[in-house]
Image (cartoon, rainbow over all chains, first blue to last red; front, side, top):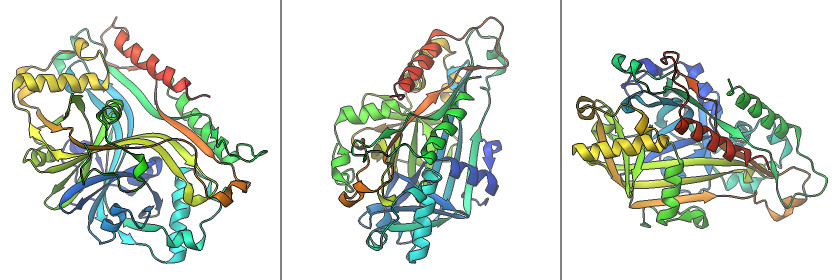
Length: 223
Length: 223
């Protein structure tokens, strides 16, 4: 997946090009930032996404300027970033962040086949929360028609990862300043039920599992 | 701050253009996604930033391809997105996310004046963690020279915000599916000290305050 475009130029040791690393970051993220040119102007829009094998899917209204632009087959860059920590160094200039990111280049294709579209929407929903699709009303014909789905091949991609403590200049290690890492992670709160929820519907297992799994991960932050 | 470029086209009621809303989202974020064209190819790079009044600052190595491109005065789009929740609807198609985002257009200018540069780096460090600057070694002349700082005026910007429960089709409210919001927030873990920290340096007050403030916010998630 390494090309001249995806090669990590700044601090090359942070670059990763293997599929497993790229996929694991894409699967852990919830939103991506889609970059494209609209009449020569770069535009960056946050949006949700899904993945099936080597395809990344985005979707939305056919009226969306982003989706209308992208289905022309123009060049696009999709970036997913997970923030893992603040890196506090002894010197101001060596402050950094721990993160995992993927930068993906390519051109998007319109998914028009009904079955393919449904598969993409399934991937989309399950990406947000495993088990969710089975406990929702599936899209009907009108909804499928009224939704634009685009697929981007995950071929030209690179991951960049920073982990670990700050790296200060040798002379600075004797300074009296505290240095270290403040871990960051997305925290999941207690589910808030829709005020219009019909009586007698409890929080389902797939939602409970999602919250518990996240609380478990969060507790692991407390060293 | 509303122009034809920044006007929120999709779901216009989610659009905000007042300075206070835009600044509050920028100040709450930790990273932005910078979009620009490099030899015609859109590129989206995550990076840290700072703000002083109506200027957004980014910085990095003079060797950075992004900073070299941007200081040519080319068009740039900077987007900051804060994810606040997963919105689970009864129908798959009405799933959404609660978020706050800012999209900012403009052209960046190189900050070359020494004092201005120092101010920007101060804003940068304090943006990550208030109180940090005073307890670090300030940049020396060589570091200042070896750092590129760019300023982008916060003029052509729009914010987009979604809050609240899912919105389902009227007929779907009687379905037996659970619906509601799963709140999300960045969680701050316990500070991990640098393995090379000199003896006798405890976690400083500004770091403790940062962790406590975040834990307080996170507890407010538990309704």
